[in-house]
Length: 210
Image (cartoon, rainbow, N blue to C red; front, side):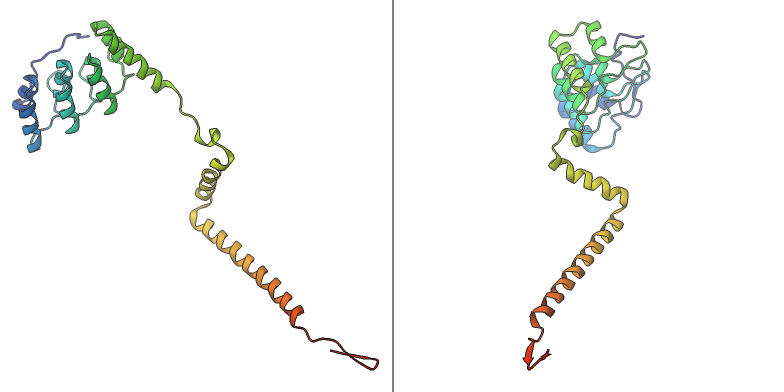
């Protein structure tokens, strides 16, 4: 596996962007990208786009510009390396992770970005940051339904029930329950009025007249 980085990037369609990135000319890089006429994810013969060069240069502002214009952090070169495999900067490391770089990706030699960083002798602070990020990403997320209180679980359970039953059927069920409730209420109210307004019993002699 190739541990060296070839800075002679050959992008036939537009060498200007490659040269601007190589020279770390931020204003020219910005000007080129604003035109929207180049593909910044185009690769050279080694399968590397311009962000590989920017990361290897350790220029966080340059990397940030490329990322903001859509540089792909998950591209791999012909040796299986991602841009993260060439990262030796703490700030750039966090930028790449923020934009979706895979910290657990392995190259053809079976090395992760952290292993590659150790092999290349980067600063200890970067290695410690790799450890922190790896630990954070490996922690399983808690199940919000199981970890919440019964009152918090109710909306989730109700939503799951509605999804299984179908929202249309659920609405029909609610309307049916509402109709039955109104009917029962009306019936009870009508019976109470009947007893309230019935004619009094009049006693005439030995006969009872309503």
